[in-house]
Length: 448
Image (tube, rainbow, N blue to C red; front, side, top):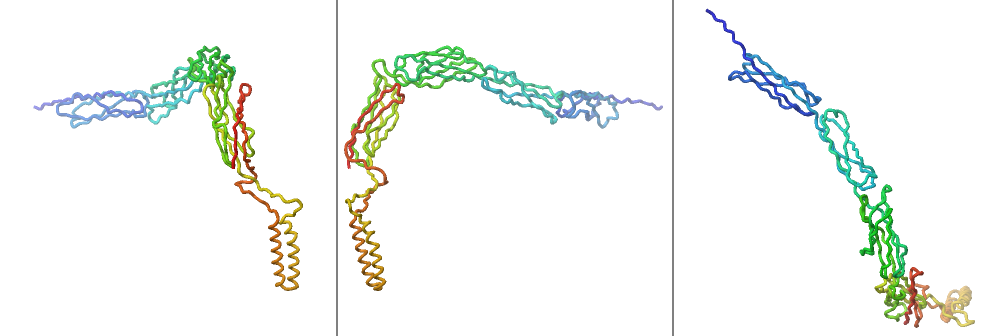
């Protein structure tokens, strides 16, 4: 008997795994699970999907194809997987910046990272800070624009704008720059700021590094009255303590001169060492002048000299000095004489004609006579007479009064005469309304 046996094919189930990737990236390596294979049978699976790196975010089917030696003995069932394309992360970052209070905002910058598929984006920035914003910190927020922005998830990283304090303008003024000892001086400090915002806070007044006083400002103005400055020259300044908007600011300097000490009239003395000079004609000599303040005399003085010997000159180093009410100051006086004279004409006796003039009167007639003789007696006798006439002319020339020149390195400068004179040194205050004038004699002896 024949027997017919029907052998049914096994069912081979291929379950494709799901996958996920971001927009703009390559598809990952797909995987699957195979069930129903008999012992010894092996299979290979290949995958396909419509999704490419440029595919927009969304879901895409992952199909599979199975191959193997005994694949015909199986009924193959493929369960597709799902590829999920997600949006790409686009990070926009703003850089941090710092500016001073009252200044304009700088040009903000930043970076954009995460763009894919050649997408290009533009980054701009916003902030709530304006030129009048008070010192503090303000967010710099990036704003991104560009095509395909919907394919991205934005990650915004704000920057920080830090507005710092700025220095105010501080002007210091004094009621007087030259004041008698013990008299009051009113110091006024005026502060001004940015954007019509007046600085506030205390103002500190200084004499050099010595604090004179601290005064609260009112409407940007602080005043201090002082009457205790010692005699001498003082450099006064003011400094604002600062507030929420403005940092500490140093003012200009004011030079204050205090004259007198309260114990007598302010004055000074002038002395010379040596008090006399002996100088040869054409030479120089020096002496040291010492100016010493009395009773706190302070101020600028200028030196000069008068009643100098003829053709002499004087020079001071320095020419202007400043007394500080305490310490003496020295000045070098240099006196120079001259040994140079201009060309002079020696005097002639009255009624006498100079040798040169007499020679001129004789020379031309003699030459004329010699010419006539030469013509008549040929050249011999004429030459003899000519020689005689030239000799006469020479003697007459030498017998006259000639010019005499005393040599010097330059002409037109006088010779300082020999003898003794008194040169007067003058000391004059620059501020003639408050200063004291003095003179000092210096004995000058000029020798050969």
